[in-house]
Length: 470
Ligand SMILES: [Zn+2]
Image 1 (cartoon, rainbow, N blue to C red):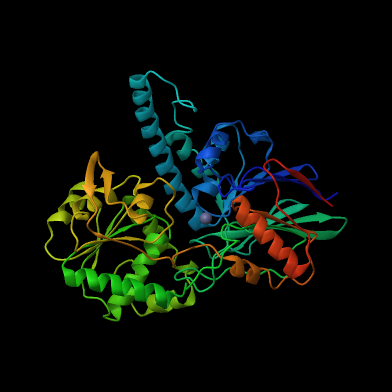
Image 2 (image 1 turned 120 degrees about the horizontal axis):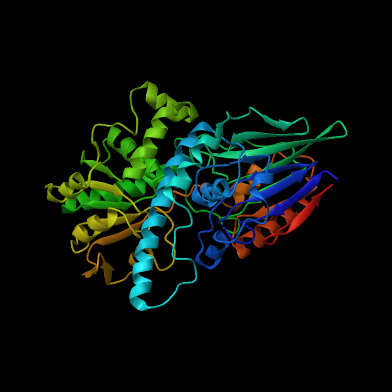
């Protein structure tokens, strides 16, 4: 037997990616993600179903919380080995984990006070899942690897990172297990990006995989127009209309990739003079720190982006861009006369500086609140998108008079056809494909289509399923 694979997350749901690969006395964890869906969050508090001390290595695909968000807990509970990932992923994960720990600590204090007032107890302990100190303890474990450079754990097993084209530094992980003089490859897709995204390279295609674990976030749908030209056209029209009416454009944005892509598109439009030279404010401390990581890792950019850099054009330092660090600077934006574009977190308006900017513009019919990312149910972002006439923000009700708009093309995940295309180089049928990282409907629908199109053996594992790899 080659080994065993256990699905410890993202099994018939999207978040909490975590897979345990055991082979010939070696135990490797691929990703250690946080559960973010409300109904699975209690799993974050459960003990790991393995002894963290018994692991020989951790391989990390990328820096999103649903892939790396439980690393502080893993280290606190005794993991002593290395966490292999690209240098960019290590740097971004450090920023994201610290921010998550800080938010959890603040949230715990708030919950303790609220529960004391209400005289009740919540479903989880009124403490943070991990502390800032726990998050800080992760950094020394990161061991940076370059794409295509395999890391040997011992003479029988090695892991390699390949470009995933999802966010900066993201990787598909190929584990090679040697048995009886033969090499067996097990591929973990992580999150797979679409080809032709701005900034990052296209995902690497594989021509063989004995076993394959593939994400299916959008496995049941095809994105409509996703071309960069369409995004820029929509963006241009929205900005021109708002600026000629004399309003501001407020963009609630996620700190990783989405904010940088937005800057990229704005820079393009400004260079081509398709929008007036209004100031663009990046008002998110986390997005600013992550943009610094982008600056340090130009070697990861795609050809077009490299060419722009050589020509002296870059999305992170164009003329109209204003970086807003302090809260005072952030507040001062409101007193600026004329139109501006303000990119601020959080992406779903659940916190952060964007709330203030929305409050200052929501009563102005000339302003636009522009959404560029997924809005989860019951978030202020979703409530606005669903057409609410008024909304509670910062403790007050506000009538909604501003334009509420959405541009869809920013998805960093391949859709159904993108995933099928990503698999199109595989000539020899894998022994089995496991579809993960998708809601029940998306995962099962993608599994069915993949099976129909290829005739391969495709399974949708359940949480904690263990399969034997033969
Ligand atoms: Zn991701």
